[in-house]
Amino acid sequence: MRKLSVAGLALVLVGGLSAVVGLYLLGRPSAAAEPAGPAGGAGGRAGVAKFIDLGARSCIPCKMMAPMLDELKKEFPGRLDVTFVDVNERENLPVARQYGIQAIPTQIFLDAEGRELARHMGFITRYGILDKFRELGYAFAAEALKPAFSRLEPAKADERPKGAICFMCDGDLNPKTVVVVKSEKGDVRLCGPHCYFILYSCLTQDKAGFDGRASAIDWAGGKPAPMIAAIYLCGLDEKTGRPTIKAFAERGAAEAEQKVSGGSLVGYEVLKGKELAVRCGFCDRSVYPEDAAQVKIGGVHSYGCCSHCAMGVAARTGRDIEVRQPDRLTGEMVVVKTLGGYIVAVEPATAVAWFGKKKMPDGSFVSAGCFHQGFFASLDNLRKWCERNPTETGHMITIDQALGDKMKMSPEQVAKACKVGECAPK
Figure 1 (cartoon, helix red, strand yellow):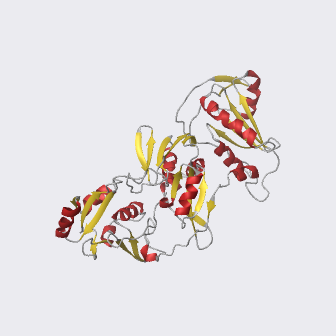
Figure 2 (spheres, rainbow, N blue to C red):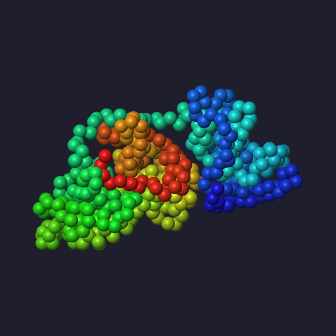
Figure 3 (cartoon, rainbow, N blue to C red):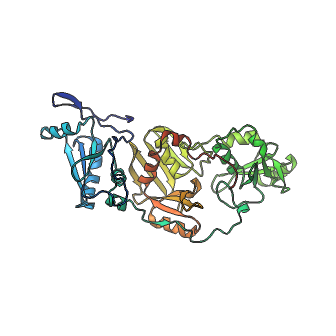
């Protein structure tokens, strides 16, 4: 477990040995190896689950967890037994000795007979506790974490022809801005230069010569021109500040359009440098700040290409972060703060996340990609957004789960996150 900060240290003698029980660890979640047993299979585990939080009333993360533990007691009577043990009190030293406590807070997950199933050191949230009990096969936890809203079949079929849909963002193709990449499996059509550079930044293959396989539609003539030879007129959208890009095969046509709409003329290499300058802090994808979530890691500022990748910055860096992401319906800012791999603050408190998913031919579901994820200030806003976007499929998840899904990724998975292994349509 990575130690990010130390809020206090106290030594006590347990069984004649010196054991550190006052070390307030605020780091990435750490769990002991679990014994073999059912984990969410048919029937799951029976009986009342037990949860013991060993800490101290003077411990900062323990204080933060106290209201949440009280809520769990009220929420699952007869299904979950929650106990807090202050290890600074002399009468509780045998309990600390029994569980071999090395740091506080430490949480012990037990079955109805008192057998230890798992443990965790450091701050943990309601979601983290329930998610662990769900993994251990307890039905009450699985039920509590079911999504409040799902739509796994579109309300309206997407009737657009495949050739009219951008390969990266699934948006409509504008005939005047299309970029086409030649591949062994056919043409890859993108809605514009920005989605081309998103694709470029996500490639896992050797990129040498890749630029030469792309062509951009000439804004003036409507015919394809090699991207590396084109001239680009770059401007800013008046309302959003988002960059605009028009490609031209001839400089004269670009200069004529510049007189009408303004902007600056640049060559391919300059455009490429600008497009690849700002990256997602999780998956390294090219982003526009106007489209991205803002991520603060200590005093360092970064971006997330979507709300979920923004949460993934905590998994990639092992640091506590603050994420600012507008509601996809209203634009209201949703602010999220993490501590030790868990959510400690969400504003507004009613905010939820949408996990966009798409159905594969074999009936399984996979992530629909970054363009289909988002935060919403309330479940009601999410429902309204789904009504306006009838082809979207997926389900609501809590923002805790959005972070939890990323924190469960292995270092190898994080390293490969959101990379495009092939650039041809299926």
